[in-house]
Image (cartoon, rainbow, N blue to C red; front, side, top):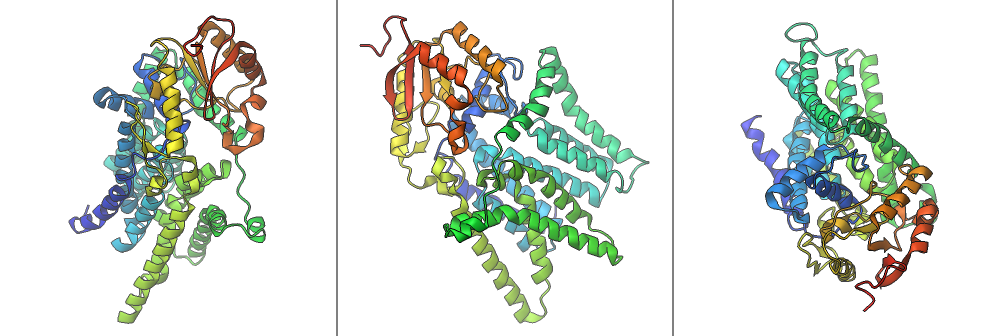
Length: 519
């Protein structure tokens, strides 16, 4: 790393920290944060992922959080500070990747700043982090092949497969393709052998550990196939563009629809330009090609579930290419006036884009921790040992009320929280007794639904916390009672309402004697 480029690289890191540190305590996601942290607590209690509970996330993130919890204690804020740290690392990696595409460090900080302004849900940081880390490793390997760089690229790919198996698979596929045109170093095929060694160094011990725990086969099934089945069954279509315009939709919604189309447009323009260069005999551009490949292959994240949170996870390669185009168009001014005109155009473009992204972060309506905008409308500090976050007053009072009612039961008494609110277990200090963390189409078929009923009968929970208003992706047809009628009817037959707190129904067994809520 050049010493003179260090201040430029530090600027986006400081910018990220300035935006994240004031906001890391705001907002909550009972679904997504619980989908990560409840498995962490189950691991700390001695359970093994995929064998003892169903999950389609790679295990690395669970064990990373488990390590932090074992050191600092189980606290939602510990995971939030982890996201702050990973964001800072990510924006620096974005800057270093951009330096491979553009000559000016001023242009290179732009995609890092854009990510900092609108990073998407914080708990999704592993997707863009894995994408950019692998892209940078392969860019370095392409520009100067060596055993060391090949080994590091393989090591990063192996770590990625343990954090985001989909991005890891993409990176390994691109690395295999690179072998066809990568210059050799230290003997034919030597760099790729070192890549494979780095890859195996992490994967083999983990595979052996899960094999020894009788969890390797279910892990392969749940990571390679279950996630795809679930994503396909819960797909979200691309938001319409022209109907919103013709219907006079809000300009933020219209801009969001345009933003979904920006990455493929950038990738098509880049592919066309690369083909034109080859046709004119000017050769290719490996850095642009690698960035475009990562962008095209990770864009499936938005194609399968087309909403702003998923788009923001995979848009970073498009930002990198967009800045490369910006410098190509405006980066070579002639004369002093040309330089100033170029700078003004760049500043205006960055300002407009950053402002649009700030307004596009409409996920704040879901109270997700996602950006500096998470602060809006929230001023109620949650008084829970594991969840000292700040929410809207009405939501905070409801969550505190639910956790307080759970606390009326003795420790060790089983409870069940559904559908899709696993963070309740974490906040209440209880263990999830079910095999499934989420109840969604594509993950539970009818036979698994019936086995879940058998498991509930066996554990005989004293309390079921049921969220009446939960709608998967906000669609009426995805209501729990429509998707899982056997389980819903079982709950109605065997449990009765003891108390209603907001949208949460506290259900207790019928005919099982007095409960803490009968007095």
